[in-house]
Amino acid sequence: MPELPEVETMRRCIEPVAGSLIVRAWQPSSNLQSIRFIPSWRVVRDGLKGRRISEVARLGKRLILHLDDSRCLVIEPRMTGLVMLASPPNRSHLRLVLELSRPDAPRLLFWDQRGLGVVQLLTEAEFAHQFGPDRIGPDALTVARRDFVARFQNSRRPIKVALLDQKALAGIGNLYASEMLHRARIHPCTPCDCLPIVQWVRLWKAMRVILTEAIAHQGTTLRDGTYRIAADEPGTHQHHLRVYQRQGQPCFQCRRGRIVRIVQAQRSTFFCPRCQAEL
Image (cartoon, rainbow, N blue to C red; front, top):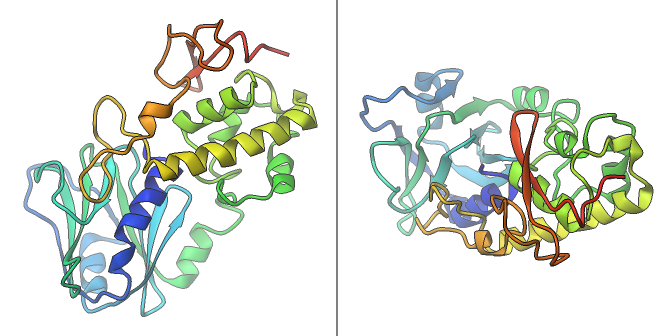
């Protein structure tokens, strides 16, 4: 967390800052270890001052602020990062503040409880090198069906593990991979090269439906309450999850099985053994 729906929700919530001038960038004083700034905090701070935000975009699980000098600020929330306009959950984990010229959105805040987030100021060439098509896959929300299938169908990895590979497909994380596979009735341990084309098509359709629904619900706020939308309110997609963190509970889909939890690649996977039977 956050995954594609949460970051897309952040992007839509902060979109009003497009056109704003960055008056000042600063870090609140804190005893916590700083997040990573690339190339360095001083370069980022000085490079942002006086620049205008021309566009607010998203790349997979990253937010991109395009600037008027052709550079861009890439914000990677990682595990607990939030990009907000309103007051953060607390000030102790506030990592970056951009003071803006826009009266209705005077500040853009980056809050990160665990401090694993990364902020990069990149030139066009640096961005293309770091996030080109050989480094990160197409966006899960817009990838064409044929491209989606071609990127996975010859892999011997379990399908759940493969879906988390950002070089193959950008934006899918642990939560939505489990939900997609359940909706498509595919066992998470199935090797990619064993799936028939009909199941690939079903998975692609399930992915698009689930991501669209999650965005409409403004993302998923889990039990720890960390994820918040830009106005410091929780998302609501947690009320629509079918398998994630529901181990031991009845399956909503087949009405007969109970959700189980296994570990794959050191990550929790949730599924129904009845409607997601092994091939």
